[in-house]
Length: 200
Image 1 (cartoon, one colour):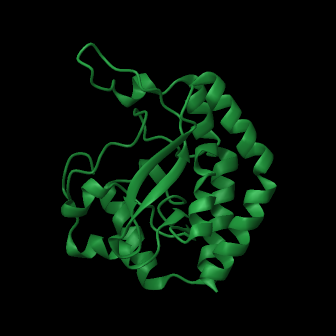
Image 2: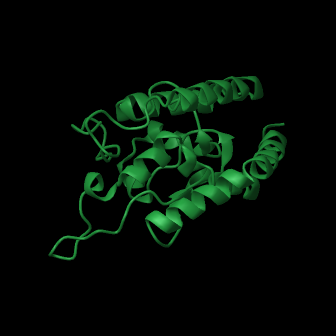
C-alpha cells in the first residue's frame, strides 16, 4: 500500500505541477544560470546510494583561494524564495516514482554522515527515505540532530499508511505557512559531526 501510494501520488503531482516545475526551471536558468538541477548522491534504503534531484538554489561563487564561499554568501534572494516555498523539493517526485524515495520517511542525509551514526541512528535506513517525514513536520531544520534521529527511528518502528497521510497533511500546512525552512541564524542547516556535538 505504501509503495502504491507513492507511485500514484507522485505521478499525479508531477502532472499537476508540470507548469510550476517548468516555471521554476526557467527562473533558475535566467537568474542563476545552469545547471538548473542540483544532484547529489545520498544513502537510500539499506544505505544503498542513489542520486537525489533538487532545483538549484545557490550560486557557485568562489573566493580568491578557489574554494566555494559559505552557503549564506551563495544563497541569493531568488534561491531563498525558492526554498521558502519548498519549490526546490519538487524534482524529488521523480525520485519517488523511480523508487529511490518514498513520499514519507526519514530525510536522506549526506553519505559523509554514515560513519558518524550510532547503531540506533543507523536504523533510519531500514525504511525508504522520504521527501518529508516526522522531523520535517516537528521543527525541520530547527530541531537538534538528536531530536531528528529520535523521530526518524520512532517512525521506523511505528510507520503506517494512515500515519504517512497525516504527515503529508501536516507537511502541506508547513509549506503554506513557510515554517522551519532554515535553521535560525543560518542559511542552511549546520552539518552533523557526531552525536553530542555542538552542531547537534
